[in-house]
Length: 388
Image 1: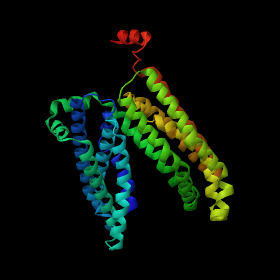
Image 2 (image 1 turned 120 degrees about the horizontal axis):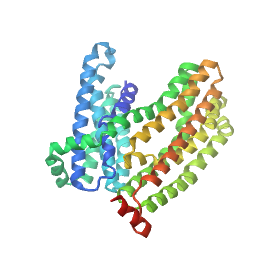
Image 3 (image 1 turned 90 degrees about the vertical axis):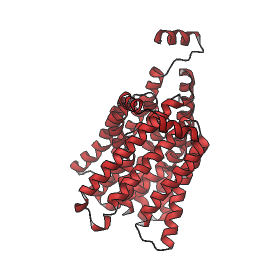
Image 4 (image 1 turned 60 degrees about the vertical axis):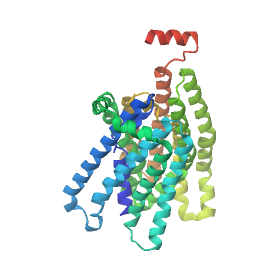
């Protein structure tokens, strides 16, 4: 039940705020930030009610054990939307310490609550309750640290007319960002399911383990570098500053994540057998197949929010659509042609690496072409005056 719940909430929670939370990036004035937060609260409330209504309508088709998920999923979905909103607010304000504390507290609180509920034998459903409680603990903890009473009053007083004008002005976020986000989730979650359906559940397990080991350094190192880029971009600065920052983060990501991922992937077949035994050799071979894709993903991750920062969501949608074809094309072609599982996974990884390379190139292109010129130089002042 918890697996079904969490998978559903992960997908629905990503679009609970209709992606308006990403529009907090680049908002300079507090007044506009308050309007954006009020719009996000409206979007989360609306999508939560829609999810609850849909669940009640479909409740007759839901297995008896999962009936309670009809009302638990909308709560978890709304909580996920608010959690992401507070993360975006923290990055916008440059509160990286509070952001990092929140990222630690959320999973730690959930794990501790689940352990406690398990010890007192509250049942499997308590795992879902622990997830929801951990969200509220996170929201309360981070809310007290990053929001002042003046901020709360500012959100409450934001005019509804301005809120609706903001929604019309930022239409690209729900129109382009939602399908791009769904495509990105599909790329991350569906390959294991498809591999399992084509080659057996054992290969799905091997692929799941291998992908988590390969992408571990991306989550631990490259993703925080992305948060640093967003925080620095919200402080302002010219083209030279942001491009220099991007180059520096790419070098850091390459040295701290890409090279270790490649080394881990190449060494996996020699390490896994003596450590875990020969039955784990397929997982090691899959790690080798995924290593290059993981290395390119590590380079792409620090710049993943560039389209949102520059309000170019249509570019992100096109890139993610191309990535979807490059990842799922080899899977479907391999299944139809009867290729060996490892061959199919190698081709899928090659397509995924190509997709991440395109994503990185697109982010760098947008930075080079779209970022405000540095007005500290004479040429930058001329360009800025012409644009005005």
